[in-house]
Amino acid sequence: MAKVSPTPLTLQQMKTFATNGPELRLKASAFLHNELQIRFARAVVELSELPLGLNEPPPVKMAIANYTTFLHDVAAMKAPSTPDEDAIFTSRITQMKKQGSNLVPMICGGLHTIKTTPRGIDALRLQDVQDDLNTRLDTFFLSRIGIRMLIGQHS
Image (cartoon, rainbow, N blue to C red):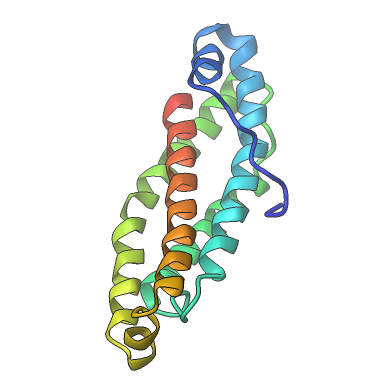
């Protein structure tokens, strides 16, 4: 799933899904069911592949575990095909959004941990390392914003 590119959506498309009746809402739910699996899988990979051992501190491992759990939870559900199933799906992904609200401080805690190690101190002095880390974290955080927007719009 992580190798599949997320589907780019405009704000207008998101609004259309949200405001055009129950039939389109079910299509949006089916789309979101698949899209969240892709995006959660990518988040797991992005965090797991952070350089300098940034994927090793306990807070970052907890963030990876959270996204892995979210991925498995969505995959275990079937795509909603009725309004009742959509209500259950919406409730569950809304819970995931709430549970994921503390992931930014967790990842920042991991970065702080790395900054205090000799390896981290030395590596972070190099501009190439800083640029690579910034690019990876920017990609992850932008993806995270996209996930939260999709769930928020659907809720």
